Length: 235
Image (tube, rainbow, N blue to C red; front, side, top):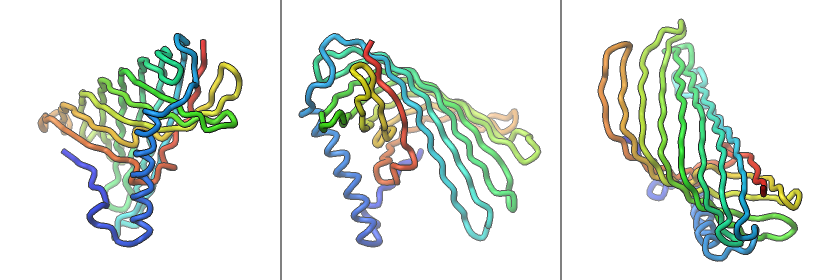
């Protein structure tokens, strides 16, 4: 079980404090706009949406000189109905993957995982002017995943599956390109709470199962590493 440890109690300098407070303010703004959003769609409109996100990172852990590289991506398709002029309720499906490559000098290996989900969401918009809109989305859903790891020769080291559910908050910016088409830029799940049940194996031998509860707060890291590009089309 892993909990993301926030830097609130271990700040090392003013710059770190500023970054942390900026992420908190971002979350507070999202909550504010949930209650003060202005008209974006007409009540009864049906909207088709999609989102594609990608993230990557590199790191080193001395004395190992090799970089540890990770990549992740996710695609999300949604269908919703405007329940009033500033609010959208709908359903979505998602599919994504993650890979992590360890350096070759110590213990070369590669881990990959895939995830899928089905959920519901509620989204509101705030008019910023000049065809720009700020939106906040809250959602919940069921999700499942599978993972495996291999050594440098391609031999399987471990594998497993998991399933569970989550709730989340995600912000973004939308730009109105035409009367019925909006381009969106989002930061996927700046805050989420999740539960999952997992089973794992080492080779063909079961290594256990367990229940996992997690809290993630991505607004305390660099959100530019996890931007998503999407669209919203009024049908």
